[in-house]
Structures are given as C-alpha cells and as structure tokens.
Length: 128
Image (tube, rainbow, N blue to C red; front, top):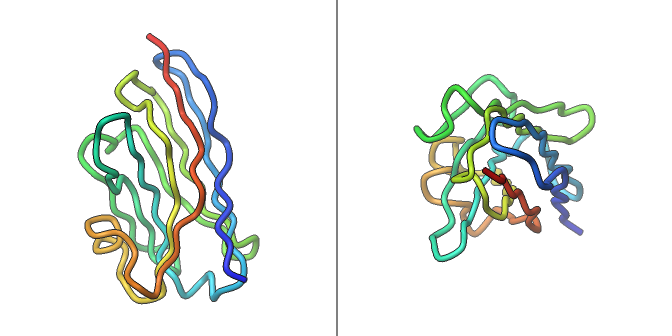
C-alpha cells in the first residue's frame, strides 16, 4: 500500500520556523520526485517546493525562495521542508506528493501524474 505521511504543522508566530516531514512507503522512494504543495482558504493548491529522487535538483516557487529549504533522506524515506521567516500569508494546509515519472519542476508546476500520489495535509498557521 502506498502511503505518504505528512507531519510537522502547527501554530507559529510571524517570523518563526517550522519543519515539515513527509514519510513515504510502498513505492520506490528514491526513484520519485517529491514535492510540497499548499492550499490556503479560498485559493487553489500550489506547488511550492519539489526535489528530485536523488536530491540534487530542487525547485522553489518565488514566494518561498530564500525562506524555505527542501531536503530528503532516502535512507529514511523522508522529505523535509524547513520553513523560516514565516509570514501570515504562509498559512495553509500543506500536502506532500510523490511521482516516479515527473521531474521535480514539472511535479511542482502540474502536480503528480496518474502514476503519482498525494499525502494527507498538515495545517500550518502563522499568526501576525
């Protein structure tokens, strides 16, 4: 059974930090690009950061560049999103997704293909 388990969300003040984790199982983790997406109330889900299977290629949307860092530990089948200098505009439900077919940039731009998977969300709330 394929599973992607996201965790690490919470309530933080503006300027604070959080680290999200996404643990995968049931598929070839190190052969899959993995990404983080978020959906704020009333807005569409957007891809914010993605990483290649080997971890050498990363993608960030402009709004998080310089504040968020994506990384992965394939030995633990985990992808991390370190979020710093958080702003109220970062408040959203954060999801991870994996895809064995799409490259990291395409995963972020289009979401997973029909061969990919979504994990459940984790809420991040940033207070002003």
